[in-house]
Image (cartoon, rainbow, N blue to C red; front, top):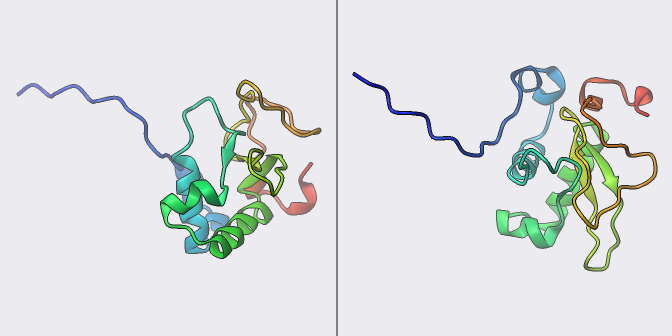
Length: 134
């Protein structure tokens, strides 16, 4: 019996070593959901240009207060790093990168904040103590 070829398409991937780690196990359920929602934005070339703005995330069922708590938790635990600080007004959302992947070059028209450099080497903040960041 001949196997049918696998269909290629996008997927949401959390590396096994991340998912099995103690820091990941200690995440709150909302933080894991937000990671998955942010991974849905990833296309393999835009880590660093991911947005958790409420206008976009309310379509995924997020309330403003729970989104803020989960976002702050992922930043403080090192799973996300802010690549561009946004403004409260529309048109300039805060952008982030997932730290188990390298940061991609910004998309056209976007500039990262000072101190943020694209590169293939993951920052890995999620598995380091906060004192070793930067």
